[in-house]
Amino acid sequence: MRKIIERIKIPLTIVGTVLITTILTFILFFLLFSTGELFGFYEFTDNLLFLLFLLALCWSLSTIPLVFLFSRFVSQTYRIKFKIYSFILSTFPIAAVVIRIYYSLSRLSFYHGSFIEGTKVLTPTGTKLIENLKVGDQIIGYESEVNRNVISNVQKNRTRTTEDYYLINNALGVTSEHPLAIRRTNGLLDWKRVRELSLGEKIISYDMGDVEIYSLEKRKIQSPLYVYNPQVSYPNNYFIIVGNTAILAHNKH
Image: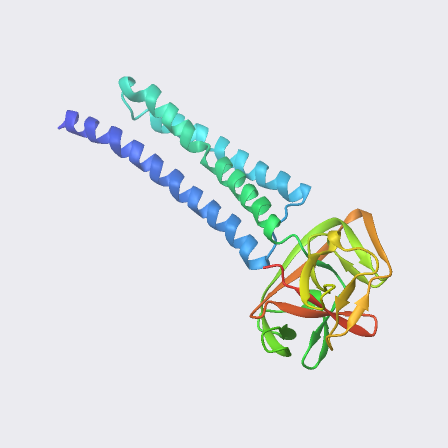
């Protein structure tokens, strides 16, 4: 009976350790990913990055005494292997943080275009600050297939920070990757990233008129600035207020 208990004890201890580590790792994964999804925040500040690494490191180091504690129940033959496997498993939380950071950086390549705080968006009832947009809010967009303005719904409002942006016509602050609707030489609508724009080009306005770019300045700032990128339903665009008119912007989805 004693031999049977000894044989069962080893795999049970190993399986138990694996299960506990796996469960804790999945919890950490869930917290890391759900936080980004809930708040639409995909860029880590230095402080948050430091805290995440500190959390993962403490989490992993806390498993060391547990490994030594559980190893007492493992026979001498399997003790070294048990410790090695356990230490490998203890690195899972750090791996979770690294993967989460990679995920955030990869998402930033898709959601890099954004407008600075204080930008106004055209809605059916007037205007609304871009930072105040909520899921379900209605905004005005343009459907090119039928050549008319339509109502779209906000599906998500992504937030991040930036240390530089472009100022167009001394009124519109937008990051370099955001596409704006411009008028091609043949008169047709086209999308162009802000960093590719040049003086004299024409941005399409609310009434399908043209707003000429007479000022285009890239600005660098000392402290990070919050920028916003609302994701909207079809036709995936919306109008941004610039001075006394509104220009058409893509939702960079």
